[in-house]
Image 1 (cartoon, rainbow, N blue to C red):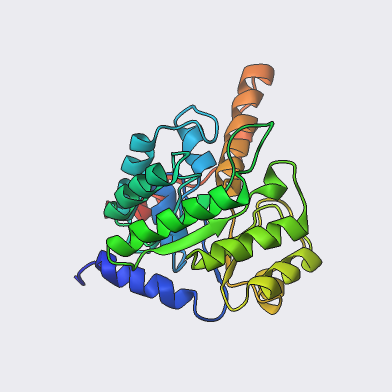
Image 2: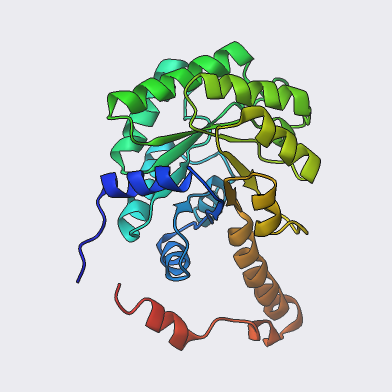
Length: 276
């Protein structure tokens, strides 16, 4: 039996994925979903803060840092693939706190992690640019102090928090690129014009695009637009919850069991996890 790739090996392969072409980095929320995605041949995975939070009966962005760190370690250990951590806003408001959180995440063995510029405050949903830049620099310094091989993703959340200003988003992404981010990400941009504008603005840095809703854009379309990686956020978890909720409601409200018609085969699942 071949030895599992080391953390260093996975980080090297993760960086190589960002050098050319386009790849899909789907988002598992637990060990089982991670191993299934690995079985389909994906080359890397990314955690989802929302998907994991729902599995813990929490809302998104309301899981403690220590629980998230334990989850990251669990997912890293469960697969042979590089794991990118959805690390929210670094579980701290100040740069020193972000640096400490990043240091601990790197210790969990992740191949990459993202830092957002959202505050969680509806009245001021984004950090001022200078504060967000210092937070990104702190994350970069923490990664460099640990060896520098963990990929840093800079996320600008304007389109997610009610400030869908493309010019502002691009300016923030460019500032994060200059502050040490290896990859840029603006979740919420949807159409070709927005995506192309972001890709062109931060080139040659790679761009992650989120497809977390029904979209007519395909992997080939996004590749042609210059996107380097595609994630789905909590969409796979929401899809799983959707099937579960429909079947459970049919029993509770109608006494019907036909919601199981699309259920996965127990035999197939047992075969999939027989080595675990």
